Image (cartoon, rainbow, N blue to C red; front, top):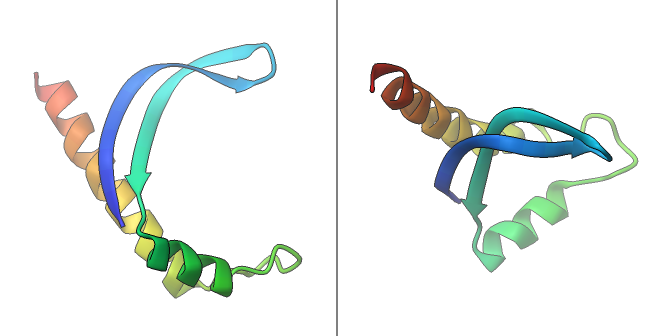
Length: 74
């Protein structure tokens, strides 16, 4: 998995509501999708595991951190 891009803009967040925020585009291989779906149980509030979720969250957080620092410094 990798973050392909981060961008700031106005997004439709629910129905007729638009808010300023960040869009994050990620790229997952077919194998990564299969692994994620195998670890996910939609009926469980603790699925996927923290370790699997962290693998997704950390690259997103790092990409946003870098992008926000560039935007706020520029």
